[in-house]
Length: 151
Image (tube, rainbow, N blue to C red):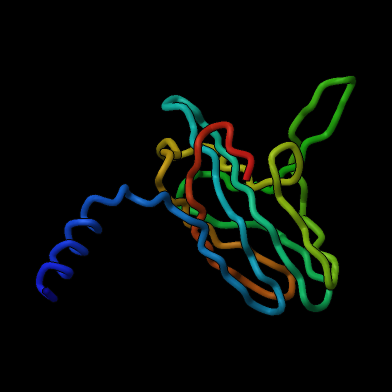
């Protein structure tokens, strides 16, 4: 009886669909990074975007930059309305107030991957290292979701 149960379990597991990539949470210096993801990019796209939530349980900090091998020029960006049109703009840093959350989300603050070395493909992962003024560097892996992903 035990053999059949084991065999049935092994066959059932082999038949499960592949699970989607999930965000890797990370923390350091009172900061916790969650809900990270990047959007997939069309084959000829030169840029992509990444999003995440920074929960700060300590003193105020600032996200100064991020590093990645996925692109030539990683930048911190935001969306602004200018003359009735939405436009992206580079920001020098992103404030992370004490005892709060800072959300990088579509339509707002985000990580911008400029000069992609290869397309961001749905189901893949993008390794990034966030650089904070006080907490230092925090490495995370962002799963790549579809082009219209919101969270």
